[in-house]
Amino acid sequence: MKTPARRLSLSLVAIAVLACDSADQEIAAVAPGCGSENFAEVVVTPASLLLLVGDSTVVTAKAALCSTLPVPFAVTWSSSNQAVASVDSLSGRVRALAPGQGTIIATIVGDSLVKGAAAVQVNAR
Image (tube, rainbow, N blue to C red):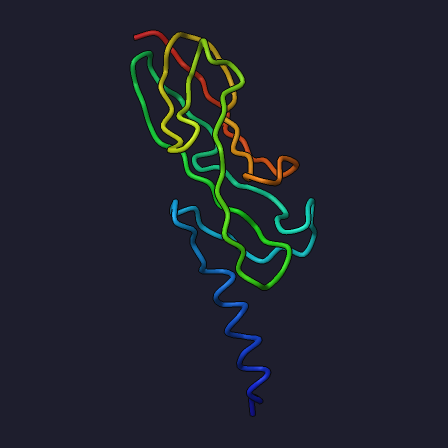
């Protein structure tokens, strides 16, 4: 039989796993190992992009938590090679600008140690 405290504990875990922030960034799971106070890692989807010059797409981020309590979060997006692919820092919209390679990076706002990335390859049309 589940005690009220056990039911509450299970409910908090379920909330932590399913919680979303206002930017629709999902909490992926409760992680056992932590790289920061609140977040273990950020997973960017898709993990790699193959685009043609002129194309655009949106990347998303999921965060793995260090605790069972829901933690709202937001990410900022950046590109390692702005000449090849730009990314809107708030929406995650990636635009292919020129042939080449780069990395799209998601960083937890307020916790710059926790990042995730996606490789981007841009080919000529």
